[in-house]
Amino acid sequence: MTHIVNFLQFDLVWLHRARTLGLTYRAIIAIVLLSLIATVTEIFGIAIFLPIFQFIRLEGDIDTLIVDSSLWRYLLDVLYYFDIKLSLALLLLLSFSLFLSRQFFTYARLVYNASVTQKLTQMQRNCIFSGYIDADTSYHDSMPVGNLVNVITTEVSGAVTGVMAPIELIAYIVILIGYLSVLFLLSWQMTTLSIVVLLMASYIPKAWIRKSAYTGRKLVNANTLMSEFLVGRLRSPRLVRLASTETAEKNEFYKLTQEQRKHSIFSSILQAKTEVSMEPIIIGLSLIFLYFSYTVLHLQIEVIGLYLVIALRLMPVVKGIISQWQSVQRFIGSIEVIESRLKMMNYSIEKNNGTEYLKGFESSIMIDKVNYRYPTGKNDVLKNVTIEFKVSEMTAVVGPSGSGKSTLIDLLPLLRLPTKGAIYIDGKNIDKFTLESLRRLISYAPQSPQIFDGTVKNHILYGKTNATDKEIQYAIRLAGAENFINHLPKGINTVLGEDAVNLSGGQRQRLDLARALIGKAPVLILDEPTSNLDAESEEMFKSVLNQIRKETSTTIIIVSHSLASITDADKIVVLNHGEVESIGKHTDLLRQKKWYAKAWKIQQLTDN
Image 1: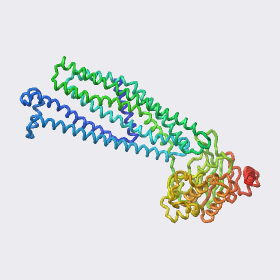
Image 2: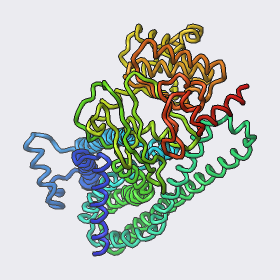
Image 3: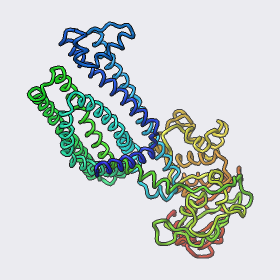
Image 4: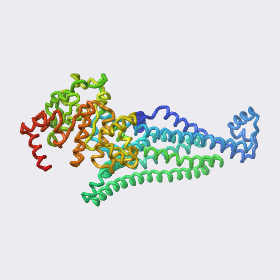
């Protein structure tokens, strides 16, 4: 009774998980139905061997056959109805046709099963990637990229395999029931005994199956650690070389892959133990039946032969049932990881409660008495911050490292939500606007340009996918990138490679600025645009910035550590320890003799 309850509980849990991963009732029913039809045709194909053997033994004597079994009477009535003459060739052809039908339905099941499996895999990969993109910034902060790569590339496949395994299990159980039904008709005594022995034998691999679940979870963890390590190191080969840590990194990677290998081998050992343990039991049962059926039950030779054929056909079926059950346990870790990631992503999905569409702004963006604290932090990184960014002006935000400059910038497009206070556009709280319309208001150029593998044109179009060639050329010229792009081998059609490593820091910066400018957003945010530039490139960038201010009415917000690059700003905001220390023009801040004046003096001495 306990086993039945446990099995029903498993069915309910599996069904819930299968539905969560996108498996439909229609797909489940279709696969089981195809299995059932294939099983029925195979059983009839095998069962017809009994009349074939009887026909051969009695040399086609119809009268004796009818006396020997009432089934012959029904078979002959059907044949006479269709005016078909009974013959050995007909019986053999009928058997072959049934087996051929079985193969057709088996093929259909296998193809459909593969189609469903691949569809589920695609759906889950798309779902996890979409969930990651739609999650809030706090989730991105906490989720290592390598972890997510492992989930999408490896664990999704394992989870889908684990979810599909019970359907295969059901198919095998259907086949088992069909075979046992035929065996029961042939000899209910031996079949009853065989069922009891099989049930007892099924306890043998129980411990191995239980260990499969534990090993599967260990393997998931090993895969995750390896992927996290791999992604991090592949992104920083120069650091590894310059730090002379090649040997240490290789040794660490060897340890991680060794851990993967260990758990994979142990999982295979458990699977192998299960498979080899069942075969001797079934063969032993067949031999026992052969002995008792001949010496005790005195069965006809054709019944004995058919029983042995079916018993041997049961061998892969029983092994398949145990193997599929073990697969369910083996991949339970992958299923749990997928469920956990989807749950976390759904919980962390970015809130988009605004209903109004923001077309632009006419006066200012006001940060009003804003505080911000990171979800895992104990203290506020921004404290009672009030700043006004006026339309068509350039406002610079400066301050020492860790003063909250980048956090402040993340608040404007609502990548992060204020813990306290509010942000207004033309006097209206920005949480009233849809995220899409708010972010269309802003173009952003990060400190380190993120350039994907593709052409120059591809990267610029990332800022506006439907831009015309004229718009592309204008953005390139405005960003000061025209000269170096024209000297590339294929101009704007030159393939850059990941991160455009063949371009200098200044070239990457100007290329990314063209991407930010092409959308003609009213607000342009530049986060540490000169941090990776030499003096010449920095001076060039400053002239580009002046050109943008001259030709457009763009509101520019620039975060910079280089005070020399923002001396022409309409307003400079000094953040220190998360608070606004000073606001004013360059000359005003020098007279105040606070952080700005001290930093300016130090930078001037360093430059000289």
